[in-house]
Image 1 (tube, helix red, strand yellow):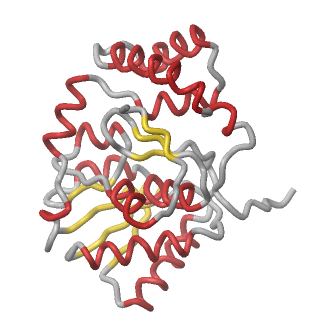
Image 2: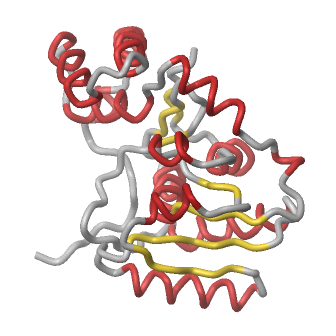
Length: 240
């Protein structure tokens, strides 16, 4: 059956799952989960324990898993975060799908979750295959606009080589960059998380916890763009 997805939008159940009345219970569960994760309990086992206790759905569990952060992790991420005014002339290495899909989701009015660390994350289902949606071009234009506004030097996009259609996306982004005279490079890697985290003298752009724990510096790019450019996004802020 051909894929007919046109947007990276919300699941039909999201309006109920993340309704205002459910947020207090979700936030309480997130505190419990962050406590366990912060003390080196297994994230998978901790999520099952908390999810079963509160009888959460798979999507609610996904949101909690992406948003949890232990106290020491939070301190470390805050110390390594670079402010926008300190980005001028810097090089950015971007966790491609991690960033692009979140901005597509935000533009599609899917729920975006602000975790304890302040990062904006989605729960879109994109695994072995990537397909462009109507918001893909708009998302890339927003990235390009802000990269220029921030006065950056060079942008390196890193995408998962094993994901189907990564090659087509690479070509698409290169064409847009050429049209706009943007100093972008796009590469495909088997382990993009490791590449982004270990790229020396480059600032990591990712909301992946594994990357944030291992990189030297990072910037919350999607959060910056969403706040500045997207009108009335669906934000679920777990920090409140």
